[in-house]
Length: 317
Image (tube, rainbow, N blue to C red; front, side, top):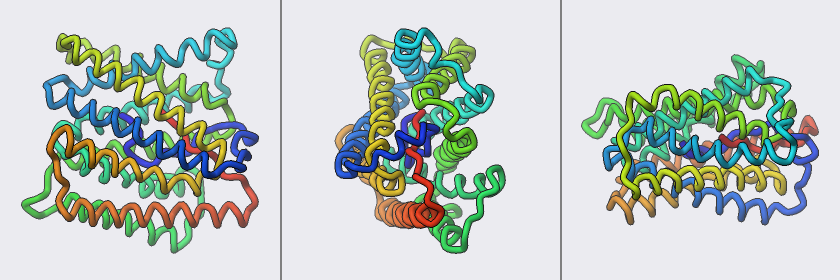
């Protein structure tokens, strides 16, 4: 999966998070990253509609991801960048991202890409709940209210109990849960490892796990399908890396709302590639979710300002 939801926080050194002198450049990078991530999702949907199993699509994506990351961690440092102070948490984080990717691709097989992406933005709701349970964070009434409003936005999109409801809507929701779990784990090991270490673990865990299961789902891809699969891996990896760079130049709570630009890209690409036109309820629900996410980012900025702690950048898979 690519980042179909607002990217979570990444465990990076504090000094990287303090580079707040070029917020406009950070905003431009975030918008650029959403174009790459939306393109990756669009290509994944194209392959799934062509009959390629989601496990195979994800395996190609993580294989390319690993092939890009391994030279970066092995050549300059001789493998030292793979040494993690919290390896078990890194593995579980990788599993969360892997699950998120698989379930989102499955959802793309059945749902319009804009609807799947908008539904996936439910992840902040899970993040808030899981942070209270596993991190002991205190969440005030206003943030809980914003969380509930975001949930209402998702319900507007999926419309359970009506003729418009599609059971496949559960897949991007589960995907968002996996992403949120990865975020909470990232916060738990905040500052423990370098960003490149976190990205490398995600790539390796995804590749190894999928390599076990892909033989049971494998269908021989055509040269065009293989090329598109490689493009998915390159596009998602580049998009995620741009996110890491972007959060070196501006605070996370400032940049996070701009990740919703991805919804604009997938709507456009869905129309051009698949002739999909989201219904009015998808737009209404997406607007409610975005408003909830923007307000949550605002409250996060206020909270961090009060405790004088620099905001961490968001992580990548």
